[in-house]
Image (cartoon, rainbow over all chains, first blue to last red; front, side):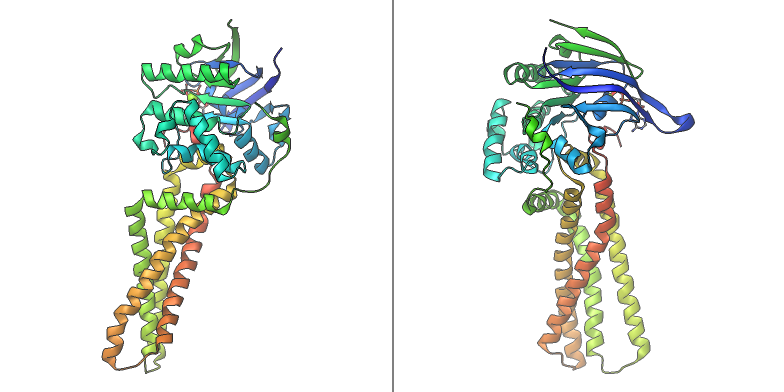
Length: 230
Length: 195
Ligand SMILES: Nc1ncnc2c1ncn2[C@@H]1O[C@H](COP(=O)(O)OP(=O)(O)OP(=O)(O)O)[C@@H](O)[C@H]1O
Ligand SMILES: [Mg+2]
């Protein structure tokens, strides 16, 4: 059995108070294993992005706990949380979220600088990551000069910058056409199989389900069903 | 791949200063025209302030009413400037919510975010105030010469330095609220799709 990288116990998140309260998550208990490709599916508003926020240490739960590498992230100080986001988790977004004022290379270099690498070391490693996603030749371009699919590739390279234990993706193909979306899925799957990257991806995209090892079905903030695939 | 040793040894330092500096420069370069307008606003306010200073120094009479009036005018000009910069920076923070959230996802600490925003406004403030003081003093040159009073080179330099200093101080004060707002932006803002 592979080791557990992420574990949640009775995870709950409530937005707002009293009558206006939204229970985005209602007691999610799950374990995510190192090296797996996990998809999280469910209707719009079911709590996928909320779960992404909780697992990614981007927001605090109102109940329950999240453990990453056996560390309860609610116990971390802001500095430690920043360290966790930098080293242990890579994020991929629907809207790509490259830093628009910096080049592709600079985007991949940034998290390495936050990790304390020297600029020379960082650039060398960042070029390798860009080559890995097939964009080494466009390293000096700004995001505005790249297509959506190319931006998402840079974002994937950036997510892998510090060799994170998990890569979290929220609808990574949501803003891409069918063909480009498929290329991004294939890339994530390849990185998962060849580099051993743990991928956790919230998605509406049925193509994504096909490559998953496991699928979490979420509805109304609850983990309804876990589908194992072979 | 995952390295457990690293997750336990917590580094407590921000990246080197130039990382924030480069980010501030890149942000200014990309929004060049808007930033130029903000800078011009600072420059105008400081030009006004400097010219009041020159006039005060060159003034032969010591009418207390005129003194009070000039302090009042200069103070109002500076205050308007301050409100202008704060406003334009607050706007740029709200606009950049996703960028700030993304920075936090990449591992930026709150202090790094503060540094970027303060540096941005310091750069603009410095350029605006220096330009403004030189222009304000330069404009007064002709007036003072016509009036026939003489001011030493040292006094001119002093006024330019004072104008630049006051402008710089003002931009720092103006940047405090927006920078804190930026630092408080939750990392989860990176996922927000609409405003
Ligand atoms: N910041 C917030 N404040 C208040 N309510 C929120 C907030 N974020 C999410 N919600 C609510 O929580 C519920 C779950 O939202 P979430 O974004 O997690 O859904 P989702 O599964 O990601 O949906 P989609 O597929 O449309 O992205 C929704 O009812 C939503 O309105
Ligand atoms: Mg969502």
